[in-house]
Amino acid sequence: MKDKKYIERIILYILKINRYMESVTDEESFAFNSEKVDAVILNLEQIGETAKKISIITRNIHSDIEWV
Image (cartoon, rainbow, N blue to C red):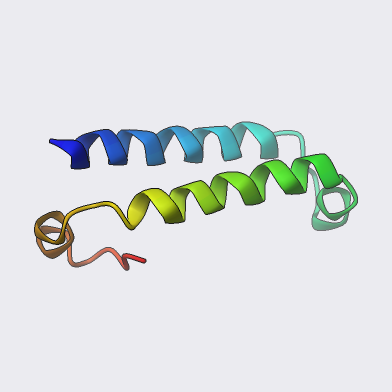
């Protein structure tokens, strides 16, 4: 059941990104906040790295998702 843990971890990364973006009002204010940009990019990278670990079986079951 490693896949369940991976998916839970991905969800946590998504929730963190959403929390970081709550106060963002426009693209420009986001672009000029380097800490926020770095935090979002880091979590997106973590999502990608974690998604690579999900088994082929789970990927095939959920083939509607565009896996990394």
